[in-house]
Amino acid sequence: MKFGICVMANVDEIGFFNHAENLGYDSVWVTDSQMMFSDCYAVLALAARATTKLRLGPGTAICGTRIPPVHAAAMATLNRLAPGRVHLGIGTGNTAMRSMGQKPMRIQDYAKYLKVLSTLLRGETVDYDFNGVSRPIKMLMHDSEYMDLEPKIPLYISGFGPRAMGLAGEFGDGLVFAIPPRGIAVPEALAHVRQGGARANRKLDSFVNCALANIVLLEPGEAVDSERVLRMVGPNVMASVYYFYDEVHEKGIEPPGFLQKIWKPYCDLVADIPPELRHFRTHEFHYTHLHPGEAELIDAELIRATCLVGTADDLIEQIRELEAQGLQELMFATGVPEKWHFAQEFSRQVMARI
Picture 1 (tube, rainbow, N blue to C red):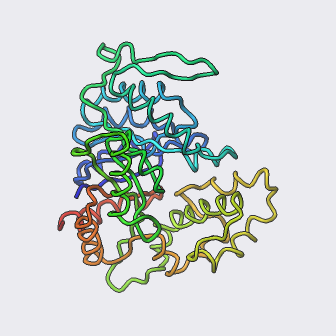
Picture 2 (picture 1 turned 120 degrees about the vertical axis):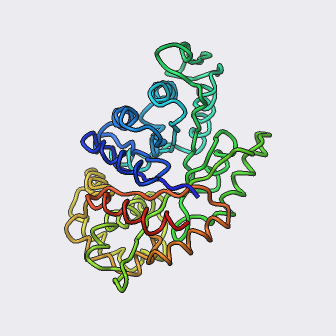
């Protein structure tokens, strides 16, 4: 099992990449949420210069805010700085798009986007529609002093539902997905990937999968909803609430069962904000802080519904089970100051024993 960390892009915390590298993490992924955090590619370029072994990449880069040639050029530039140590995680962009009051990219457009992007990363020519004009395009100077497509840049496709997981099998080198309690079980996710690979007649022998999770490492005798735990993962828990708030109101569906108890209290918290401005409030503190009134909504039940929870022994058992099911990489997301200490303790108490 390989372990990674997904952090909020911050040009003032390049030292965290050294911290993760020294602790034995395989990768650090950087969020791509414009208007909220530092630019992910600027942060990754600085991290590439500061590290020697760590694998680096967006986690995940957003389709709706950058066209495929821009992502391909940025990654080929990073590959020049850190040859063979970069990967591209790509997704439809829930938070990045929602923070602008926009919807994430539709699955049909996602498929077209991924076809262009994956072809460019291979250094091949592909037909590309832009501003109503279709032309063949390719990376023109990818073997020069400007950028490199070699060594190969792995493309991790973010997919949290069956259709997107299938696209990972069609176009990607890897899958980023959410595991239970809130996501899809590993065997089922991999089955969707294989179906996509079969549609594209692709062999997936070197395909890799990576789960994104919220992780709570409890101290002996500590309550699941202690103040320390709430500081560490409270913003992660609320990120799940924000995600479903948009989904429920757009699609007219019921909130999932694990949110039923807090749904009305949360809706009441934001009811006074004009609907056309509510996306500011919903996504402003993504993974970093709690808004007033949110901490009171989070209890042990909600934490267990959105996180892997346990002592070191408990987490080791859960991770070994995930590995037995076929999981290859596990990364946790964090945007709080406590991430430095948590990364150290997770490495010492869990990673060192797996």
